[in-house]
Length: 166
View 1 (cartoon, rainbow, N blue to C red):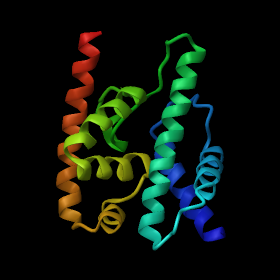
View 2: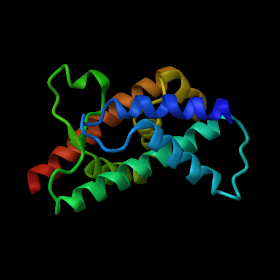
View 3: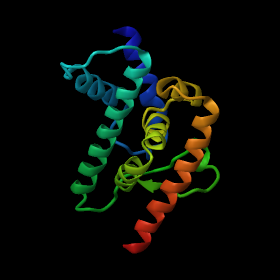
View 4: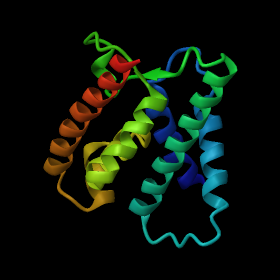
């Protein structure tokens, strides 16, 4: 349990660094919620660390998106949670994106390129490194880098297009 908790805590810390400063969900809360959801999966048969990290990233994604939806609903549709796809994006002047829009775009991406969607989920929502992501998926780090770059560009275009329509 202590090893699992430490890994989840590192993942949560990484992913929450991208969130707004006044975010009401902290890494401890995210870890506890993810752990409770994972433990509740009675049929789960954990084969290896990589499988566990993949499921943890998916749980954190669901928790963060649910939290953003509740936060937006509490403000009557305003103030939707905005985040960046990269750690260095804020310094580079990239504007944040809507977490709910990202989740919707990820659904579209997964429909035609499940591997790219998995890379984004692990890198962005799981906070995994290139090497950790490669281990979880079973592909080379070079392929992860390529898929990550392509997926970020596609997601940005998809989200920007949706925002322009509104």
